[in-house]
Each structure stands twice: as structure tokens, then as C-alpha cells.
Length: 106
Image (cartoon, rainbow, N blue to C red; front, side, top):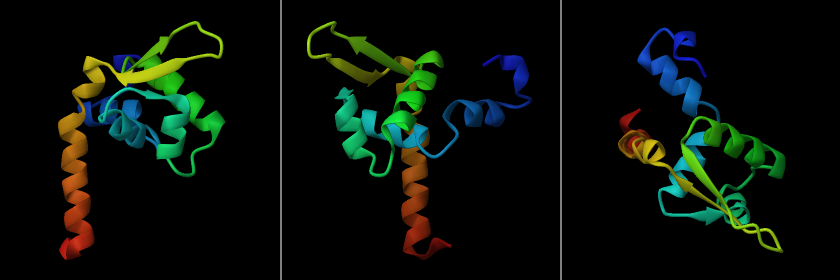
């Protein structure tokens, strides 16, 4: 994504982590490195195709690191890059806001 495509920092952030699944993938990877099937089990309702596409986009945006061990059977692990880890405070703030909203802060 070109930085010139967005007009403000919030828009840049939303272009990189927007959508239903990317924030949830990042949230799962905050717990540590995971394999594809672990992520899919953790993210109830995501299809194989959607998870693959989201992971490729996040790798292209340098939010995650894909480590392919070139073994048979295939062994691939995903982890957050330093840039992905920098979203931790944003996700924790969203988590806290969601808890307050559910608790009657509507």
C-alpha cells in the first residue's frame, strides 16, 4: 500500500488492519507463534481461503513473519513482526473499550 493513497493516519491504520479478521489474527498472534491450523481453530468461522488471503496481505504489509521450515509434511509458523507487535496497545485499548461497552457503557 502506498502512503500517498491515504489522507490521514487513521485511514492508513484502517487500510492495513481493517476488515473482520486481521485484528483477530493479530490478537491471536500476541500470544505467540502459531501454525496455520492453530490460527484457524482459534478464529472460529474463518475459512481456509480467507485465512490464507489475510495472512498473505499481512505478510506483504510486514505485520507478520511467515517461517517456512521446508519439511514434509509442510511446517509453517506465523508470528508478529516488530511492526505487528507495535499494534499491541491499540488492540488492548480496543479490548478494554469492548469490555466497557458490553458492561453497560453504551
